[in-house]
Length: 268
Image (cartoon, rainbow, N blue to C red; front, side, top):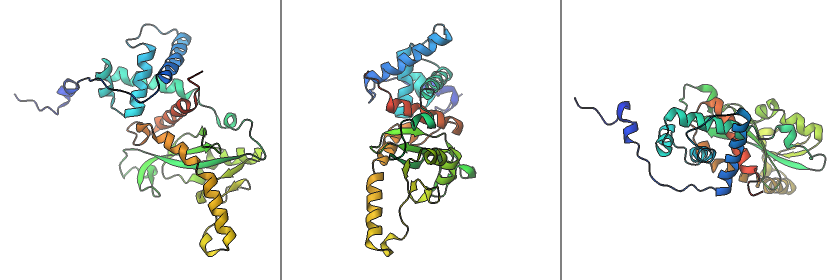
């Protein structure tokens, strides 16, 4: 009997581990491993096949390289199910350290400004999954709202909503509009947020048909909002968030975990 090499029976046999380098600081891996160690102590966890450092490294490889759990398991000498459990646990630990909306805005008030924008986390959904299809981006995904500081530092990431959700609808649902209005924080946003409220500033429509000062206002607005694009660049630098293969319910947790990795003081 001839067995095809593509059958599930031989899938794991075809996975061969090999040495590779991960483009993250060694201190970051140690920081995540310390968080896992504290988590294990709190839960009084018994012996694990992978230590805290290896589990932290496993999760960072998954985020950076977007490898499947079969590939991760082969590389670290564990089963596919164990790799999934370890990654899932680490993401939950990291996400628990991400700040909430009101915590992120602490210390900000009248006279301060932030940058608000939305981004799409692409997924591998099919066209039949209509709620996840974004007409704007012409692809399936999940909408995530971002609040960034004037220098582009990420302050807060929202939970993920289906891709067809409009940015303004999503911002209102997450409480961003009300939170910024209560604190009288000036918000710089794009045209998708027009009508959000008194503290939101958006570009003028058809500015080229308006007087010169309208065009200058739009240029100044774009210049002040530009650092916010760094936040999206940092977020998408983790390859998993360029095309997520996981359940849409886990994308919010992944984004929160990445926020912790982007803002943690692992050199301290």
